[in-house]
Image (spheres, rainbow, N blue to C red):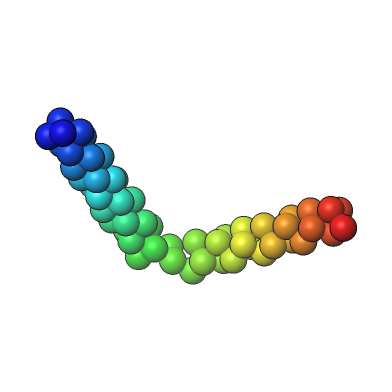
Length: 60
């Protein structure tokens, strides 16, 4: 029982460390060139919306 609990704790801590690293890197990138990243993210979201709309239309 204790071994499985430790595995869960290790997994959670690894996830938290990874999340913190990704957040830190993302913040640094946003500080450096935030407008360019926002534009690219907006275009990516719009592309995904168009893709999902097309798939939905094809399934009707």
